[in-house]
Length: 144
Image 1 (cartoon, rainbow, N blue to C red):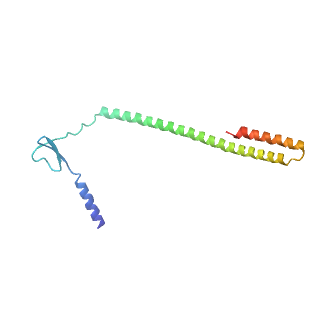
Image 2: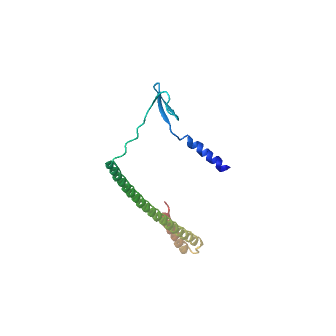
Image 3: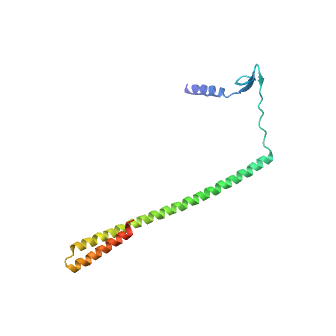
């Protein structure tokens, strides 16, 4: 039953696609699905068929455009590959810098702990100097 309904629906939709007529009646244009009864029929001529020279010129133009598209696509792929390589390089540098800064921060912390625990005056001054230098190196390399 569903098939019958679908076929009927499709048939009714296709029926509207049949011939259409353009008629002039009293100076106005009317479109209809029936031939003109009281007016004159306007004939629309078919477009001329392309000549052989037009076809070959069109084929050459198409070939040039395809070659240009291929060249542009290749250039885009190369550009994207360069950008990807640059992005990967930047990511690796960032990871390496984070690792280095983590190591320097740890050394700075340890030097500060050593300075706080040192016993004698001379050892304390040496540890403070070491802690200050570790802090300066951390600031120099990791503070942006």
